Image (cartoon, rainbow, N blue to C red; front, side):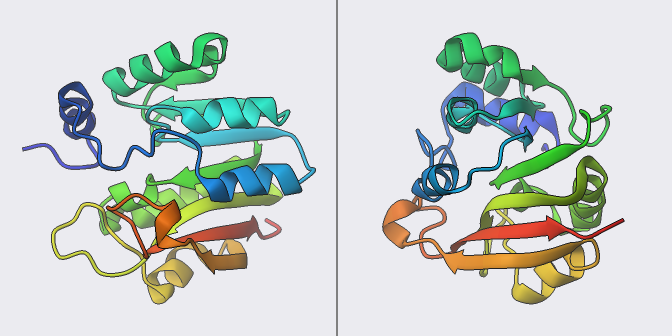
Length: 197
């Protein structure tokens, strides 16, 4: 049986249409962020899945690099994104050379898909890819999950994994009505700023 940090786990689910994490659109929290935040630059979207957020970032003026290691997810994203599908590539986020240092990395369901033993690798990779002062932003899953994945954070685990390289500058609950049933009442919109190297 595939683990959730292996392509086969996701490939099987995308091909079967079993995607309870797929929001079918751009989260309200991200829409509000893009409307209010006037900075622009290079954004990376790891584990981009169906890629809804790609078009939102492009429309807001960002240079987008999105990656997923499920061929079915990449095909789905490219088909739905039309000309913006060129922003999506297939590959292993942890193994491939990253893009030029990013100004922003967008998180949604990527960290919570990874078993906790891989979280230090996630934190190190995010720190390496973001320029000092760059931001890791998005929806983070907190709470308790008796049968993961998804693997939820706690305040302690978030600080332990990200606190050395990042400073949390915003954390607010996402209304349950703006989450999928899988995450309702357990998501937070957060912004983590990369500390000086």
